[in-house]
Amino acid sequence: MKKSLIITAALLALASCGLKEEFQPVFTGKYPAPEPERYWSDEDFGRITSIADLVSGYTIGQPKVLTNTVIKGVVTTTDRPGNFYKSFYIQDETGGIEIKVGKNGLYNDYLLGQTVYVDCEDLTLGMYGYKSGNYGGMGMAQLGFSDPSGSYETSYMEIPLLIDAHVLRGNPSELHPVTPAVITSASQLPDPKTATQATNKLIGSMVTLKGLTYGNEVFCLLYLDSNQDKKSYTNRVFLSSSNSSDPTCGITTWAMSKEKMTEYLYSGIWDECKVGSGNTYAEDEEGNTLTVGSYRGENGLYDASINGFNGIERTAYSVSQYFKLGSTDIQIRTSGFCKFCDVEIDPDVLSGRATIDVTGVLTLYQGSFQLVVNNIDDIKVNR
Picture: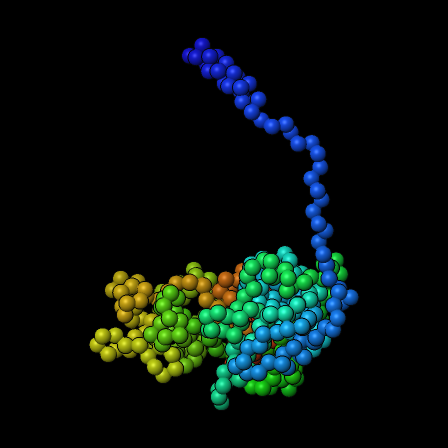
């Protein structure tokens, strides 16, 4: 055995000597230094348009392809905790706007408080969340590319070369974090039915709402199958006061991860909720209205065969938890994919014994106020 090992070692040494001649000489020179990172300043541009002036050129239902326009703002959001996704907000003295940059990890490139310039040439100014009629109202103006599908007024900038051509960074060593506007009364808020970033500087900006009380209500939209038509009433379940005897639907967390959603689902608290939207509900082959509980089989699990769908889809879901400033509803909208989605709301807040102060971006969706926070630390409990 020992003799075999010695022979094997000798053969490996000979092979090593033979291979040695095939390697190229080691490079000992110096590679060219990379080009220094370029940062931009006001001097690099001519006229800089305010966010309010930019949005004032938008007409409802008519997305606008822009030319010869540059805006400037300070970054106010971060996707690091996961509550913002593939976009960030900038804010100037006239208001704020969402920049739809279609990549993750934006916090590495666009720091809180960093100045950013947006060259809007060939970008599209559109709106998300507008709804006409008595029960509707304004949404939010956004900047991105045109949506080739026509489903939305804007889409994401996704190609790195194009992102870098349009979204130009100021010096990251010169940060100027914004000071949120403090709001203590609903009278300080704009009219959500008519206000836009063009008419009120609070829209799209960082604000601190003080003394919010729990509204005992949630809104969440579940899908039976996200691969099916998401606008079809047969594929939707609304968790809301209109579809449950309990307006909170038993949801006591800020949002729901897939694991938490599954826990809620199997608890049975949503079993009475109907499949459908508005007053139109899905039915089984015998004409019975389908509910979440309809999908629960004899073993307590959810039947995957009813109506051709895959049961109630288990995934992370965003939740709007309702709070009140006076008598005005404020939805705190939280993503099911953020790091704090499953954090329980303080029991004193849920019971009404305590209020909260919340800092976030004030947005509009179909004429309702929504507040989106960067992190759980932006929610302070007042005891």
